[in-house]
Length: 374
Image (cartoon, rainbow, N blue to C red; front, side, top):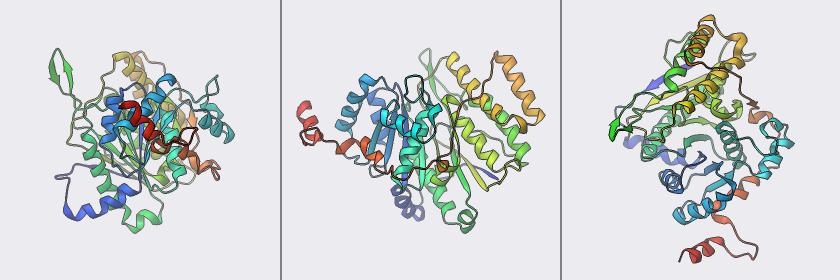
């Protein structure tokens, strides 16, 4: 296990730029969307590479889904690799049921609400494209999304630097890059306030650090336990399990650490890189009850590794639960994609491609949209 915390003195160097086109051509971007406005989502997508596959998984109200698709078509006509799928889609639910992941479905037979479920669907669709080598996950609630340019460039540099090493490929290294924000500004009483770490991350990351030190012997502090912005190789995405709801980001990290620990039946090589960005991150501020739910869900991930938790981690969890009056429950776990037999499903992503739809008469709906907007 190797943990690397990075701060770049500069972002753009001429000798690094020739690798960037290769990275972008083989990277799929997965966007988790729920209630963000069309303008906010379109702003995020505008800052993503126009020729890279972009997969939006939305859990917006079903009656708003088609209007969301139409709105994105009107604003992003150059994004020919844009896919938009609804989390409650019947076809996706049927596919998961067929492949033994029925516990991801709710009582109505649709995929459960939850961020982890949306990320799992996005990863599944990216995998079925068959050509991406890297995945990048971004949230849709970024209110100043120009920061995504820095995140994408930084991940491109880091992934391509690792990609050129023989040892990286020879041992099948799991590789995860997580973005640590420089600051999370917000408005309070009309004035700009700045926090250096998220309210959830500041509670959860120290516990992950304790666990990591015990499992790996590495003293490097973990500062990215709840990173909404992160990337990984496709091989890593296929190997990791996903958790339900808000537990997903912490659980993915714990599963990565576990697979590289001596407790795993076949320990793997793993590289965790924490990139400290220079860009501040502006996003929708949630109320305190929402933050408590996120903390509880994140800490519930530890219960899935209960037999391997050191005493100091158990004490830390107990202390936080007493202080915040939290009751922890383990999240649902969804199997790694490499455990599913997904041959013959390669045509599925095309169902959700935004700019190749035709109506029942065979007319291109791009032209229909232009007519309706004129």
